[in-house]
Length: 179
DNA sequence: TGGAAGATCGGCT
DNA sequence: GCCGATCTTCCAA
Image 1 (cartoon, rainbow, N blue to C red):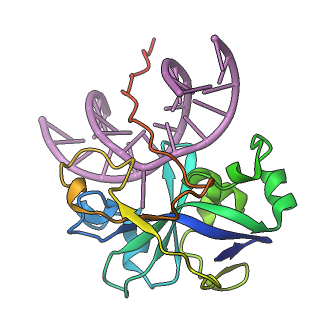
Image 2 (image 1 turned 120 degrees about the vertical axis):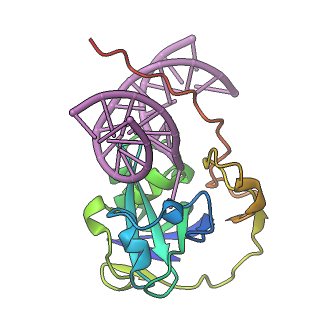
Protein backbone atom coordinates (compact mmCIF):
# COMPACT_ATOMS: atom_id res chain seq x y z
CA UNK A 1 0.00 0.00 0.00
CA UNK A 2 1.32 3.37 -0.97
CA UNK A 3 0.55 6.64 0.78
CA UNK A 4 1.20 10.05 -0.62
CA UNK A 5 -0.05 13.47 0.30
CA UNK A 6 -3.16 12.38 2.17
CA UNK A 7 -4.21 9.67 -0.24
CA UNK A 8 -3.54 5.95 0.19
CA UNK A 9 -3.91 3.44 -2.60
CA UNK A 10 -3.81 -0.34 -2.71
CA UNK A 11 -1.60 -1.13 -5.66
CA UNK A 12 -3.33 -3.41 -8.13
CA UNK A 13 -1.02 -3.28 -11.11
CA UNK A 14 2.74 -2.84 -11.42
CA UNK A 15 5.51 -3.59 -13.86
CA UNK A 16 9.14 -4.37 -13.19
CA UNK A 17 12.01 -2.83 -15.08
CA UNK A 18 15.40 -4.43 -14.69
CA UNK A 19 17.88 -1.99 -16.11
CA UNK A 20 20.51 -2.33 -18.81
CA UNK A 21 19.50 -5.88 -19.64
CA UNK A 22 15.87 -4.88 -20.10
CA UNK A 23 15.08 -3.52 -23.57
CA UNK A 24 11.98 -1.82 -22.29
CA UNK A 25 13.69 0.07 -19.54
CA UNK A 26 14.80 3.65 -19.84
CA UNK A 27 18.13 2.51 -18.47
CA UNK A 28 18.68 0.14 -21.38
CA UNK A 29 20.58 2.75 -23.31
CA UNK A 30 22.64 3.72 -20.33
CA UNK A 31 22.69 6.50 -17.82
CA UNK A 32 21.05 9.71 -18.87
CA UNK A 33 20.19 12.78 -16.85
CA UNK A 34 16.62 11.52 -16.67
CA UNK A 35 17.36 7.95 -15.63
CA UNK A 36 19.97 8.98 -13.13
CA UNK A 37 17.43 8.51 -10.36
CA UNK A 38 17.10 4.82 -11.18
CA UNK A 39 20.76 4.38 -10.36
CA UNK A 40 20.33 6.11 -7.07
CA UNK A 41 19.27 4.87 -3.68
CA UNK A 42 16.42 2.34 -3.29
CA UNK A 43 13.02 3.20 -1.80
CA UNK A 44 13.05 6.46 -3.65
CA UNK A 45 10.67 7.78 -6.27
CA UNK A 46 11.58 7.99 -9.93
CA UNK A 47 9.13 10.27 -11.67
CA UNK A 48 9.35 10.82 -15.38
CA UNK A 49 7.29 12.59 -17.97
CA UNK A 50 5.50 10.51 -20.54
CA UNK A 51 4.27 11.91 -23.82
CA UNK A 52 5.11 15.32 -22.49
CA UNK A 53 1.87 15.35 -20.60
CA UNK A 54 1.60 12.54 -18.11
CA UNK A 55 3.76 11.86 -15.13
CA UNK A 56 4.54 8.25 -14.28
CA UNK A 57 5.98 7.13 -10.98
CA UNK A 58 8.41 4.32 -10.25
CA UNK A 59 9.90 2.95 -7.07
CA UNK A 60 13.62 2.36 -7.21
CA UNK A 61 14.43 -1.05 -5.74
CA UNK A 62 18.05 -1.75 -6.47
CA UNK A 63 21.04 -0.48 -4.53
CA UNK A 64 22.85 2.62 -5.71
CA UNK A 65 24.73 1.85 -8.87
CA UNK A 66 22.17 -0.55 -10.29
CA UNK A 67 19.14 0.40 -12.32
CA UNK A 68 15.97 -1.47 -11.51
CA UNK A 69 12.60 -0.05 -10.65
CA UNK A 70 8.92 -0.89 -10.38
CA UNK A 71 6.44 1.13 -12.34
CA UNK A 72 3.20 1.75 -10.51
CA UNK A 73 0.47 1.48 -13.10
CA UNK A 74 -2.79 1.36 -11.18
CA UNK A 75 -4.30 1.17 -7.72
CA UNK A 76 -7.45 1.42 -5.69
CA UNK A 77 -7.91 4.51 -3.53
CA UNK A 78 -8.65 3.31 0.00
CA UNK A 79 -7.97 6.48 1.92
CA UNK A 80 -8.49 10.14 1.12
CA UNK A 81 -11.04 9.38 -1.57
CA UNK A 82 -12.51 12.85 -1.40
CA UNK A 83 -9.11 14.39 -1.88
CA UNK A 84 -8.38 12.14 -4.81
CA UNK A 85 -11.68 13.04 -6.39
CA UNK A 86 -10.77 16.69 -6.16
CA UNK A 87 -7.56 15.95 -8.03
CA UNK A 88 -9.33 13.85 -10.62
CA UNK A 89 -12.53 15.69 -11.52
CA UNK A 90 -12.93 13.74 -14.75
CA UNK A 91 -13.12 10.36 -13.05
CA UNK A 92 -16.70 9.25 -12.93
CA UNK A 93 -16.22 6.17 -10.81
CA UNK A 94 -13.91 5.58 -7.91
CA UNK A 95 -12.25 2.81 -9.83
CA UNK A 96 -11.03 5.39 -12.33
CA UNK A 97 -9.33 7.56 -9.74
CA UNK A 98 -6.02 5.74 -9.99
CA UNK A 99 -6.46 3.67 -13.14
CA UNK A 100 -3.43 4.18 -15.31
CA UNK A 101 0.08 5.39 -14.52
CA UNK A 102 -0.61 9.06 -15.08
CA UNK A 103 -3.86 8.98 -13.19
CA UNK A 104 -2.34 7.19 -10.24
CA UNK A 105 0.32 9.84 -10.05
CA UNK A 106 -2.24 12.61 -10.05
CA UNK A 107 -4.45 10.98 -7.46
CA UNK A 108 -1.50 10.78 -5.11
CA UNK A 109 -0.52 14.35 -5.76
CA UNK A 110 2.89 13.37 -7.10
CA UNK A 111 4.55 15.83 -9.44
CA UNK A 112 7.71 15.77 -11.48
CA UNK A 113 9.38 17.74 -8.73
CA UNK A 114 8.91 14.74 -6.44
CA UNK A 115 11.54 12.85 -8.40
CA UNK A 116 14.16 11.36 -6.06
CA UNK A 117 11.83 11.80 -3.06
CA UNK A 118 12.23 9.22 -0.30
CA UNK A 119 9.51 6.72 0.57
CA UNK A 120 10.42 6.06 4.17
CA UNK A 121 8.60 9.04 5.64
CA UNK A 122 6.26 11.93 5.02
CA UNK A 123 4.72 12.75 2.74
CA UNK A 124 5.34 9.41 1.02
CA UNK A 125 5.34 5.98 2.60
CA UNK A 126 5.18 2.41 1.38
CA UNK A 127 3.67 -0.38 3.49
CA UNK A 128 2.87 -4.05 2.82
CA UNK A 129 -0.74 -4.93 2.14
CA UNK A 130 -2.58 -6.66 5.02
CA UNK A 131 -3.76 -9.53 2.82
CA UNK A 132 -1.66 -9.68 -0.32
CA UNK A 133 -3.60 -11.52 -2.97
CA UNK A 134 -1.88 -13.72 -5.52
CA UNK A 135 -1.10 -11.55 -8.51
CA UNK A 136 -1.24 -12.66 -12.10
CA UNK A 137 1.80 -12.31 -14.29
CA UNK A 138 2.12 -11.55 -17.96
CA UNK A 139 3.71 -9.49 -20.63
CA UNK A 140 4.09 -5.83 -20.12
CA UNK A 141 1.93 -3.45 -22.06
CA UNK A 142 2.72 -0.12 -23.57
CA UNK A 143 6.31 -1.17 -24.13
CA UNK A 144 6.80 -1.16 -27.84
CA UNK A 145 9.54 -2.23 -30.12
CA UNK A 146 12.98 -3.54 -29.25
CA UNK A 147 11.51 -6.97 -29.93
CA UNK A 148 12.45 -8.41 -26.59
CA UNK A 149 9.51 -7.46 -24.42
CA UNK A 150 7.85 -10.85 -24.78
CA UNK A 151 10.75 -12.46 -23.00
CA UNK A 152 10.09 -10.39 -19.91
CA UNK A 153 6.83 -11.39 -18.18
CA UNK A 154 7.27 -8.67 -15.62
CA UNK A 155 3.75 -7.34 -15.29
CA UNK A 156 1.87 -8.14 -12.11
CA UNK A 157 -1.75 -7.35 -11.43
CA UNK A 158 -4.76 -8.40 -9.37
CA UNK A 159 -7.06 -10.43 -11.63
CA UNK A 160 -10.56 -9.11 -11.91
CA UNK A 161 -9.86 -5.86 -10.17
CA UNK A 162 -11.78 -2.99 -11.77
CA UNK A 163 -8.95 -0.56 -11.22
CA UNK A 164 -6.54 -2.50 -13.41
CA UNK A 165 -5.99 -0.72 -16.68
CA UNK A 166 -6.72 -2.66 -19.83
CA UNK A 167 -4.43 -3.23 -22.72
CA UNK A 168 -4.49 -0.47 -25.24
CA UNK A 169 -3.22 -0.86 -28.75
CA UNK A 170 -0.43 1.47 -29.64
CA UNK A 171 -1.56 4.46 -31.62
CA UNK A 172 0.08 5.17 -34.94
CA UNK A 173 1.93 8.36 -34.39
CA UNK A 174 0.75 11.05 -36.69
CA UNK A 175 3.19 13.84 -37.00
CA UNK A 176 1.49 17.18 -36.69
CA UNK A 177 1.89 19.16 -39.87
CA UNK A 178 3.80 22.27 -39.07
CA UNK A 179 3.08 25.42 -41.04
C1' DT B 1 20.82 21.41 -34.86
C1' DG B 2 17.19 18.36 -36.41
C1' DG B 3 14.38 14.39 -36.46
C1' DA B 4 12.23 10.43 -34.45
C1' DA B 5 10.25 7.83 -30.76
C1' DG B 6 7.80 7.21 -26.43
C1' DA B 7 6.10 3.05 -19.83
C1' DT B 8 -0.69 7.84 -22.17
C1' DC B 9 -5.53 10.14 -21.22
C1' DG B 10 -9.76 12.33 -22.30
C1' DG B 11 -13.57 13.19 -25.10
C1' DC B 12 -16.90 11.90 -28.30
C1' DT B 13 -19.94 8.40 -30.84
C1' DG C 1 -15.76 1.43 -27.31
C1' DC C 2 -12.89 3.86 -30.39
C1' DC C 3 -10.16 7.65 -32.09
C1' DG C 4 -7.15 11.69 -31.80
C1' DA C 5 -3.88 15.00 -29.53
C1' DT C 6 -0.07 16.39 -26.86
C1' DC C 7 5.58 17.62 -25.22
C1' DT C 8 9.77 16.05 -23.79
C1' DT C 9 13.89 13.49 -24.28
C1' DC C 10 17.48 11.15 -26.77
C1' DC C 11 20.59 9.94 -30.67
C1' DA C 12 22.80 11.09 -35.05
C1' DA C 13 24.75 14.23 -38.51
